[in-house]
Length: 240
Ligand SMILES: Nc1ncnc2c1ncn2[C@@H]1O[C@H](COP(=O)(O)OP(=O)(O)OP(=O)(O)O)[C@@H](O)[C@H]1O
Ligand SMILES: [Mg+2]
Image 1 (cartoon, rainbow, N blue to C red):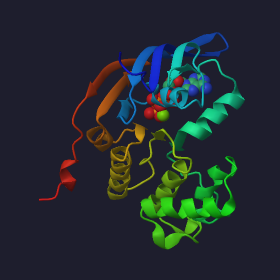
Image 2: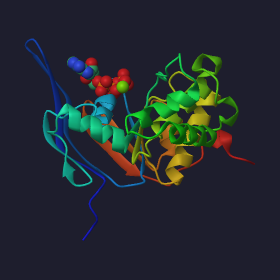
Image 3: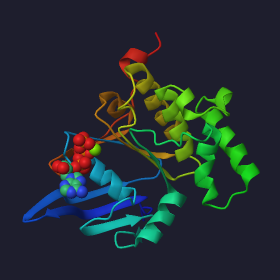
Image 4: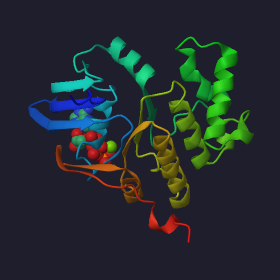
């Protein structure tokens, strides 16, 4: 018998109602995602990418349909339970880095561990390990504003890894970065995936799709394509 998929959506819909207008943003979405996959979600603006990511990341709930996470139905859980699932199972990276300017980057990365009751010394130690992992070992005491955009996004990624997430979600993580810096971030996701983290990235950046092992394409709230391929290094970065 096949193992239970990490993520299993069956006929998921999301409907927004404003006044008389009923808008079906997601229509009968059924997908399975296995542990340690690297999935890119592509599609035109408004196709429902962020909505889908938010539902899978338990930031939002479906209007109808089933969402099983590690076999457990989560589509009807309440806010408190969803927050617990997010904190224990997921890490999030967004287009805007959402770092706290008053704190050092070490404290920013340590923050999610506070909610898990981890002691200060252990938090700081782990934050430094994660910052080293994303290439920021020389900047522990700096504040976000002292760093470049690419470095700030690395801090956000380190923070997303603070509680050892099963799945790392990113929504347009390179949207505020220049081309070269964006590529560094994309490669970092590839490395984290190679180390065993399940990665799910929404992006307009075609290089993300090149890097991912699977690309799901949405159009008007439906999956119109879902293909797996061997992840390729974007051509311009191949070493001669
Ligand atoms: N809270 C809401 N109420 C009403 N409509 C919404 C709401 N959130 C999203 N939508 C609509 O749902 C559709 C899909 O939105 P979504 O943000 O998922 O698209 P997207 O593919 O992420 O687009 P983009 O590439 O621009 O980020 C859009 O038409 C959007 O206007
Ligand atoms: Mg979006």
